[in-house]
Image 1 (cartoon, rainbow, N blue to C red):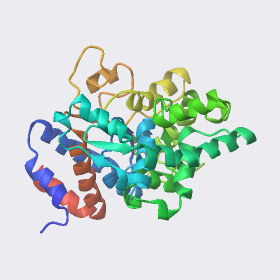
Image 2 (cartoon, rainbow, N blue to C red):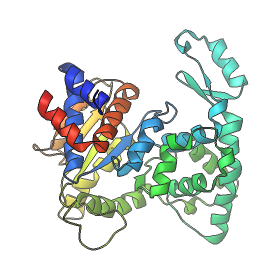
Image 3 (cartoon, rainbow, N blue to C red):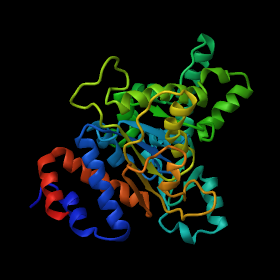
Image 4 (cartoon, one colour):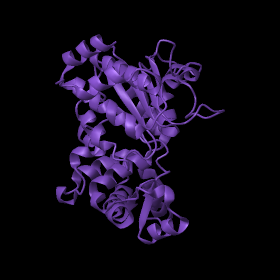
Length: 352
């Protein structure tokens, strides 16, 4: 019996079409990590509500994910899953729900996300009681932080007795504990972005306590340069020979600002700052968006070459499928490979 059952299953069975793209992206991801490369994950959609943290959290802890770009919704929903998991309600037959059925969901103070729902009182209002005092205190002291820093602080100071979800399945907790570099572009477009705006409107909090998206990019310039050289994001000096030169790859789920914002860092450093920069070392996107006119989600990777985000030599993969199916499979296989590198390499040699 193989110690890498999922890894071997993909190599053995995924031969053509989207399965082949999945296999090739998996092999390239693993080889990138093996040579000391880093990986940024850009996560759009409602992946936290879909419990992607089950595989993302251990992947962060094991060094398979080194930086993140997420929507404000994914950031906060990872926290919601931790504090209110038992109060979520699933709707497996959501396709057959009527308007009247969804009205009942609203009246039950639930917010449906496809086939599951976020409980308002146990999630939104429970977190609001903790984070609003953080905002008011920051307003009084004149403190300014990035949006994710408030959530990093909050999730780590939560009493463990308040955890309804499994903490080992919270990607936000794993990222906070490692102080993983993360950008949250467009964080205003989220439930807590709206709640924050309301407190700014009433004068309880100052808009200035949250650093802007422009400041995120300014900070990310340095983070990218450090990660692409193989240095830890907070370290100074030279990269160690063991992990230098691997570069940083880009693994994207969905489209929109979570992907578009961070991938632009390379051409911006090159053309706007006029500094030398390593190109992205890998690119994979999981998306069910079809190629279409003007759609970033549906744009082929080749188009990014013209914007100097990728090069002709960048390993590029597009998996046209559901990320809730593909990403956990890939991460599980990568976790197996991380635990048994020589076994993984032997299987690659056997099946390719």
